[in-house]
Length: 497
Ligand code: ADP
Image 1 (cartoon, rainbow, N blue to C red):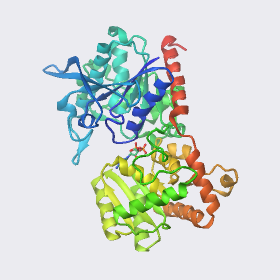
Image 2 (tube, protein in one colour; image 1 turned 135 degrees about the vertical axis):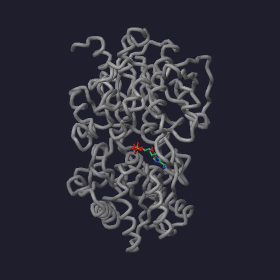
Image 3 (cartoon, rainbow, N blue to C red; image 1 turned 90 degrees about the vertical axis):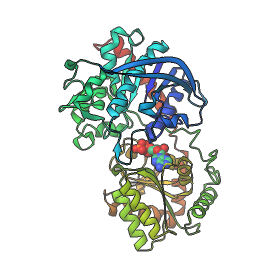
């Protein structure tokens, strides 16, 4: 099959979160199964600074965004590392050559509707210029949500898309790309195409809704989240739209790129380690973090790691009070936090680190190497998310022998098995679930984890080793995606089935 992935992020070119990990890895894995894969992303400033070799092409185009505004663009070309997966980049400096992908300290860029409408329209032009017949267009998140509808409208005019199936993957239901309806004309479509079965959501233009409503199949990134988004709390207003797609909604758990996330080969680490010498490996990496961040030098103190976007989703309203309590009560714990995002949370973290510099270290910013080192040096990894479509950090934690403490929601519930007498006996336990979604619930779950670490050392070692040997590589998920693509293609071939 010839499969094209559309996304605003893909490692190693542009990343703010898990979307980038998925779109930089899944195509490589699917290509390894014998399919031809291409990725299309915007040529953000970070793409040029990624250090990857990028070629210019002679392909340029112009898109009429309004009757009086013709915006030009051109195609750049590269490859996903160590693969034959071609990456096409839509180069339009006015839209994409900016310091960040989606916005700055004052919020989202005000022209995001225009930027990503241009991206979607340009991506379709790019496909025609490249001239490949496409079997599956795999769209990811709201930034690509217009594609299924555009394909539907323009299919007859575009031979390359004649028999193309579209798939919309939701990586996070909370980000929908909703704008006033005056964004609609940017699509170049006529007003009758704007209605409640297509792009319209209560008078607004909603990009994710459009993708969900008009794609051939809808997926999300864990089976549990696929069910959850059909409920009002997790559906963020689109639960009805999802439910209306019935059996066409599928959950496939993300994998991890084990060529990048592997403690045996990870160049970022102070010491690499295997499942056979995890204890020494952890101590060496912990010491190195303690020295670098001025924490108390102590091999035995449990280090609690956190890496993630500083966004409400991730449960900072639980984490910050628990850190504060541990500091106030001088508990024997150490906290190593990395994150960027909401300035209020950044300020709180910095305050706590200044209050107890030997107990709390907070690095505000995006730092890939430090993320690896925290996964390696910490004993526990805390992820009390209010919702979590899949989550990757808990999977990295498992692989690095760092026991995850998580809310049992979405992909966290699907990938971390809570420790109990029963799961210890069945040898399935891999981490700890919060029993209550509150600071008290988080502290209690950390308490259960630390009890095991200090008082049931054999069980703790088993837990660590089991997590390290769980197979969360992309192999299984990539095969599931291929099956899904075959399904989508057959739906197009016999649409009435
Ligand atoms: P989400 O996609 O909701 O942000 P995931 O757990 O699925 O959450 O993926 C987050 C990815 O982004 C992981 O690869 C994580 O290591 C990375 N990440 C998040 N914040 C940072 C940061 N400040 N520095 C480095 N990596 C980060």
